Image (cartoon, rainbow, N blue to C red):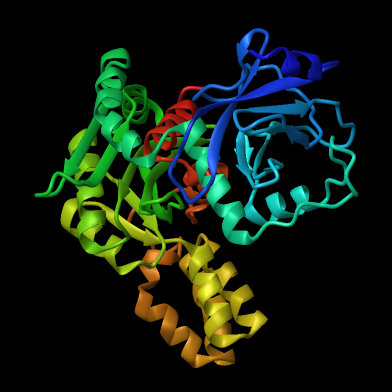
Amino acid sequence: MPSEIDNELNGDSMLMQKSRHIHCDSVETLTVDGENGPKFQNESLEGYKVHDWNMNEIAINEEDYRMNTNPTSDKQVTQIGSFRTSSTQSAEILTMIDTNDGFIHDNPTIIEDVANERQNMMQQPIYGVQISYDKAWRAKELALGSIKGSPEESYNTLSSYCYVLEQKNLGTITDIVTDCDNQFKYFFMSIGASFVGFHTSIRPVIAVDGTFLKAKYLGTLFIAACKDDNNQIYPLAFGIGDSENDASWEWFLQKLHDALGHIDDLFVISDQHGSIEKAVHKVFPHARHGVCTYHVGQNLKTKFKNPAIHKFFHDAAHAYHVSEFNFIFGQLEMIDPRAARYLMDIGVDRWARSYSTGKRYNIMTTGIVESLNAMLKNARDLPVLQLVEELRNLLQK
């Protein structure tokens, strides 16, 4: 390394050296090198020592960059080596990671954080760095690819991951389906311990729902969950497909049926999605299918915009006795006959506890699945392999 660079380094400074180029206009990806070698690798940030850095940088020459690592007191950020050079050999930071949660900042946050930095090491006039939304998005994608790997690599590695998962977890079932062009189509996973617990100690009421994925190739995450005897959430199975349609829901529920076998008195709860209803009746012909009272209530609010209707519906749905239900529902019908007809068309036995032909116990909504959706909010941004690993971590905590 040239001696002039050695002379430039002092205090807590580190040397930025170019490691490789990623073809995306003129953006280059660099890694941070110090006395003990690379500070960042293509792994999770968990376990690495976190440094608080100001965004002060300078280009020493075309190949080397110096970064001042003076600690900040107001926030904890780590620079990702993603820089862009200009004819004046200056450098500007493009993105960074929030080390508190390990996730890349949203694009507007990147823009704001970069623009708010006011000092540079060349003692030039004090200016913030202004970048466009497009540049922030591209920098974020480069940083994610450097840390997590590309989405394409993730799909290619998924089958090997599933093999190891089945070998290390007795009874675990995974399945990957590809189309005629060998492109990813469906994925199913359930840990063996989940099946054992379901058959031995879980009430046979399964809530199912789907939520959209936000990674490069999008898709839908399918979830099946139950409640244990302590009313805690009990995840049962996960799936990935293209969207919530007839084919994908039928495939997911068929895989669930194959894994569980025949279950006496099975009760499946979902929202009013038509594809779920069709798939439940086809795959689980002997099971009862109920709808989530929360979703029905929200639809009532949207369609009829009368708070009194929603209250009467809630009370009627949770009534234990038919006589109590008839009294409450009669009041609702007097207020708005159209709302009463709407609820009857759904099927009273599908949402009213007193008229239920199956045993749904006290599970009236799909809230257990919605809670899992909320827990996986950030994970839904990840490539498929990292998403599946987050699901496994959730199950095996």
